[in-house]
Image (cartoon, rainbow, N blue to C red; front, top):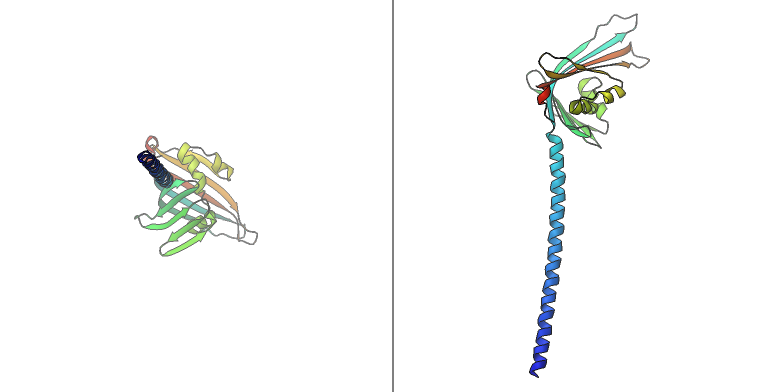
Length: 211
């Protein structure tokens, strides 16, 4: 009788041990899944932060020169000198435009799906980044293609978009870029075409550019 009691006791203890091991294994798997999910989220956040840490500061000179037909004599050339901060990458970034005294004139943000423009208290959202850039500057501005030059001094992408592009030689040792493009105006406009000229100068010397 005692032997049977001992046997059943051993069987019961073994059952309890197996149940405890199974529960511990389940909890471990749940914790591991939670840790993996947290790591994935943190990794995504770190990647996004790393993207936004690439920042470029500089000055932007923009000239808009309309060309009229022979029967008009308008001289409506417009020229703007702005400070800028460009952050991120071509597919996700932010462009801040500041006046001579540091006041923010416009902020443009974009990602792969949408873009937004903030000017003062007004904010516009669009799927078309180029339309918002035109709204802010009054001219074409190839902000996404600029990253090829900023990161590796390549101008091919800018040229593919119709820009005449060349590196500017600056005595200060800073990196500079000259862009020019002629844009045909609509048939009913008084102008025949408009020339856009852009001079971009980075504040940092060429061998110290933040990447």
